[in-house]
Length: 104
Image 1 (cartoon, rainbow, N blue to C red):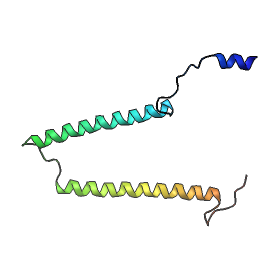
Image 2: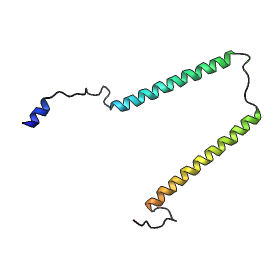
Image 3: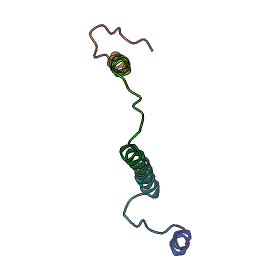
Image 4: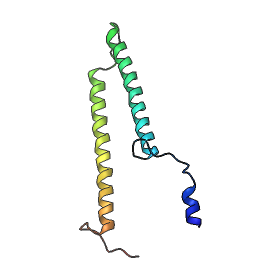
């Protein structure tokens, strides 16, 4: 009797329009709106820079070399962290050659 009473109550939620969860659709809509916003801002900046004849040039060869060196250091440090995390996970699984047996 209780089972039939539950099935007679209309659902509080409508079925999904696209066959997926509303949180997933919300995330995709956010990513779409975010990319369109930044695309419009970059387009406006580029148009303003190209259309203005007296736009100052902020970069010189020294600053480009410094930025390249800093980018290389940043990528190297990120690679180091990724390798350390992979080694840590391998040691936890007992795959790494220098791993010690786990004491639990």
